Length: 312
Image (cartoon, rainbow, N blue to C red):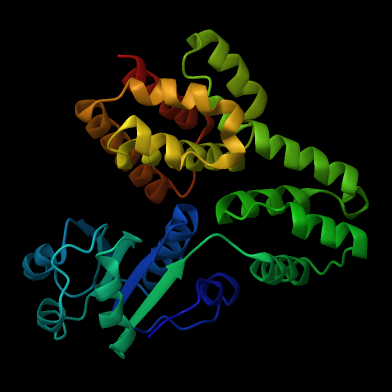
């Protein structure tokens, strides 16, 4: 059956009681957030361990090795069919599939929609209604209310990508109530627009310049988390595109001023470097899962490693 990701995001008491979770869509930061919330939910129940595999075929082999109290996560939909899903029915493990939208996901999604022991969770950029629900949830949790003009200004300006919206709201609600004004929110929004994004665009600068800029822009763990997702977004764009023309078309319109720099970065990549980038993202993501956050030093090392791969 289909499940709105906002149900998981906004309802802490929502019961995740299915065997299969297929997380799809085109908004990577929301996909990652939903995966994190699902795995944390089961880990709180005790005994569950996370095992990452390449495909559903590996699930079948791994179960006998790791037992039933496992959360199996696969970042593609390879080998998913009705027969293979049925082969997993008798196990007690939880199975999470993560796959961005593509032509091949359409048929597969229908399997999870029909299955009573499955949730299909489609993750797309947040629309106005979704941002209203999220902001209202934050206001209720913090026992606050905003003046009308400030409220609608924020709804208009909040990012449509979940992790950036979340980081902005965290900064806002860290302010004293008297300091939550349109002027201060504009300052926070400016920081969000120029921090992680501009650091990625500074890859061709000298390490000393990057270090100075990093220390200026990245001062909290929330900043590091945001930097990670900005870099992951740009890196994934490089990895997924097969040529410069395809890459050019996929660069978001709002980055038109930075297009030349982004294309210059892409030109540095070949298949070998893309593999190194995939390994770096995987290692960094495992560190994020293990520690719950990223230290300031870890974030800087991550950025400099991207630069090393790019210019090598």
